[in-house]
Length: 99
Image (tube, rainbow, N blue to C red):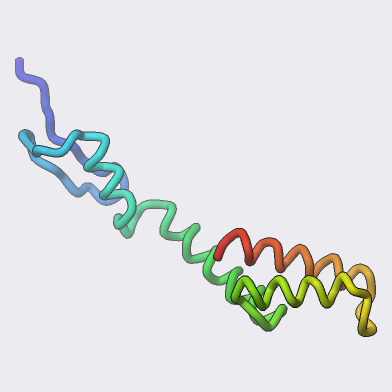
């Protein structure tokens, strides 16, 4: 009996036939990055939605702008409550981590 060497994506069923030159793990890793049925596509979409919502709340998105906004919040100027400052600084930190 011969062993089946066809590599198949469990999410979309795309097959790479026996004899495909790339290593099996490498070819699946590359495929996962573009597979439209892989669960990561939904997670990536939700991250983009959350990022967009945070940018809308904070009003800036570039690192320099986020740094300036945090400095302004921490300086205590303005009439922003402490809980709102903490929430805004947390949002700024999340935006920095996903930009």
